[in-house]
Length: 495
Ligand code: NAP
Image (cartoon, rainbow, N blue to C red):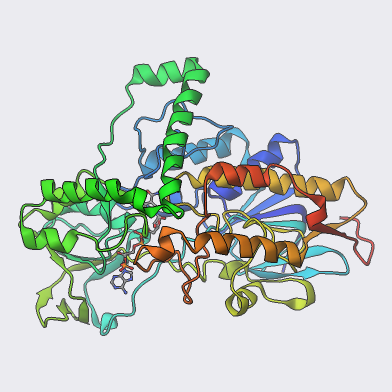
């Protein structure tokens, strides 16, 4: 086992981890390392390569505010461009030299005596760090449904986040299971070349019209030369997205016109009344992520496409049998079934004060943090895009940026005192958790009549931030020392 010592240990190189590393480097710090399980930076935007993969948040907003890219080629850019953006940032700040690629964080513990985190990797290394920053995100462990007989299937099968590009879908009978944000993007891309598209839908998504458009090169050049214009454009996108938060948070009747637009879109695009009925959601819009596509319904109109809603009874060697008893032959199964969310932090299952394991503690008591960033009993540990800081209406990159700045303030607080660690007070965390859970009770995710991965197994929303993102900015723009305890190491440490 090799032991490495560092000041700040970051896990992950997606928007969160990379953003954190960049901010440290911008401040001239060299005392940090980043663990990355893969061999390249990029997180979600490295892993998801399915056809049509793109971000459903406009690119000028879905990027770091301090690292604008005036040259986004589309309003909603595709995965290759977003991945290239992250790689270019990594080059610009020479982040890779601080990244330990092929290093999978498997857990760790807080050493109270020395006030240091000890983090281990599945590859057998140990990292000792004063500060630990999680940039692992919640959506990275593919959820493969446990369907009866699934192990008997002899055709090719893969998850949307592990797209098998070796498999040529041309002329194949393809079953797609799931109709969420990923399926809506890749179904139109494959529908034209497969022999049959069998789309297994459990719950229809609300899909709104969206015509993605290219940003003309002349506009890109103007954005590059006149940053004020680019910023004004970004701001206009930001504020129009913020408006949706009113409807999502307690005023869901305001969402009725949006639902009306969704229904009108289905009527316009789908002529078959049976298919129309299948595709029309019966829950309030916003309860699940609102999707946008001008090509999804068109793809389902094809005679080669079939939307199957009765559920799957059994998977056989080369077929799927639905609950009505109909058996359909299948060459390839694509799981568009989302991610394990509650176990997303398993790799970060660190033991805090008194050896208390984070994941088990959260499973038993519910996930509670302060501002989605710090957790009582886990000094000097910070979660980027932690619990209840996800969004249904705006860019999570905005949230990540506020969190990175907050972490830097916390680190500064420790370093400017003669303390070694900072720990959020339990009552502060409880107060925050009670407040957001009270607000979330009126949120459309709980009142809208649907189930979603936003809610945990007890129906509590542990995923979404209840309100405007500027309110989160306001809450995190300073760190209140009274909310934290400063701790001393019990033993002298000189690292
Ligand atoms: P998802 O939105 O969670 O959708 C999963 C789909 O699989 C749902 O239709 C779900 O049905 C279905 N499903 C799950 N388990 C099933 C089972 N056992 N049997 C049948 N159907 C099953 O997953 P996703 O599309 O991968 O997206 C996940 C998240 O990633 C999104 O919500 C979004 O936050 C993010 N994402 C973002 C973008 C972007 O452009 N920014 C793009 C893709 C993904 P039910 O609805 O009935 O549960």
